[in-house]
Every structure is written in structure tokens, then in C-alpha cells.
Length: 306
Ligand code: 3PG
Image (tube, rainbow, N blue to C red):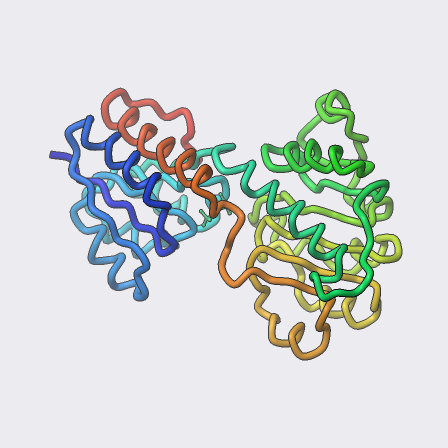
């Protein structure tokens, strides 16, 4: 009997778990759960005899992949897969997949929610501002970026997007203004919402020059990854521009400095909240389960990322 491990330090909602279990039970597989684990050793122990693993932001590094001696497939129930050591997967004949698009709406709604929260002075009772007629730059126009654009247009924002992998036509058909470079995007937009993946070419790529070119009363919204921010340069902006705000889904490494020096100009979620809705858990969790069954039974590698 095939053994499946669901290793989620941040567990799925109960409704999602029931549906995930049903997919595997119908396929005749055995499922075990490792939830809210604290030590990496617990994960290393749990992976030993499993054929497939579902994770979220859990770290599947070289050691984890090496410890999973029977592993054939690991699926990141979500979009970003920078938490999986893809080279180790390939070296060990393990297929790695993600579930693109499945939790995008939850992330997009959070991005807009954080914009409102920032515009209204973190709900501290002071007079804030509205999003209507403000400029919003979407940095990377993928599954989440597109949904952010659509919701932001409902707010009456003027929406711009930059994506080096898309044509102007792909972007402009949604009534969004296509921009040719990141520099131009930041220069034009009071709000910038980040949707770039974390990888070798994007890590620390958001720094002083881009942020400093943003118009007065700028807000950077990061529901992507903290790794893409150059934190030293972000701190320099926070110091030099008292009109600059940063809201992020998970705290940066330098969060303590923000707390000491920039009260009222930042908000960080205590835990990554972007995909924390029942709907997103169900969509991404069930897609991950179905992709595993389809791979193990039929060899389907549609969402392979390694
Ligand atoms: C993703 O990449 O899909 C999101 O960042 C969600 O991450 P999570 O599953 O850890 O909440």
C-alpha cells in the first residue's frame, strides 16, 4: 500500500483535510499527518517510508529528500516552491510539483486588505486615505497579480503592471496599463504589490533605487516572499522617507528595528496568512492530492517544476 505524508507545520483547515484524505482513501493509499511540528528531526523521521509528500512552506532541503528513501513525488500545495531543494529531488529521482493558481485568490484578497489597512493608518483612529484614484503597480502579472488587478479596479485604482515574461497585449486585455521596466513601474505607482517568485535572480532585487523612485506617500505591499527584499536598503528608505510604508505577509529579519523605529508605518503578519483560507486550503490541498494520485497511477507530470 502506498504511503502518503502530509507534513504541514501550518495545518490545513479541517474541511480540506477531510477532502484530501478522501482522495487518497479512494486511491487505496494510507495517509499520515505531521502537523504543527517544531523540530526538523520530526520531519526527518516522518518522511522515512513515504512514497509521496504534501507540504506547504515546510522546508524540504537536501537532508529531508535524502531521508525519504522511498519518495517518488513531493508536492508543494501552493505556488512558491523555493522551499524545496529541486536539485536534490532530481538527483534522487523525485518529482517535485506545485499547484499553481489554487490559492491565488486568497493571496490577492490579502494584498488588497493590507493596502486598505495601510491607507487607513492601521485602524488607529486617525484620518487615512482612500485607494480610489491611487496608482497601483503590480510587479509580476501571474495568477495572483491578475486577481489583485481585478479587485483593485473595483476599488477605482489606476492599475499598472510589469512582467518581463508577458506581452503588452497579455496585460492590456484586462484593462491594465502595461509597463516596460520595473524602474518605470515604481516611478509611476504610489502602491506597489509584489508578486515575483523568490529565486537566484530575484533575491534581494527590491532595493533603495526602486523604492526611492516611488511617489510621495508610497506603500510597498509584499505578499510574495521576504527574500526578494534587500532589507538593508529597505531600512534606509524607512529612515530617509517618513512618507514610506511597508506591509508584508510575514515579518522581515529586521522586524525588531521596524518595531523600535517605524511604528505606524508598517504591518507584518505573525505567520504567513496569504493562503490561510478554508477555500485556498481546499483548492491547493485537494489539487496536490489529485496530482499525486495522477502521477503515481498514470505518470502525469503536468505540474513538475524540477
Ligand atoms: C504560496 O506560495 O502558495 C503561498 O506563499 C502560501 O504559502 P503557505 O501554504 O505556506 O501558506
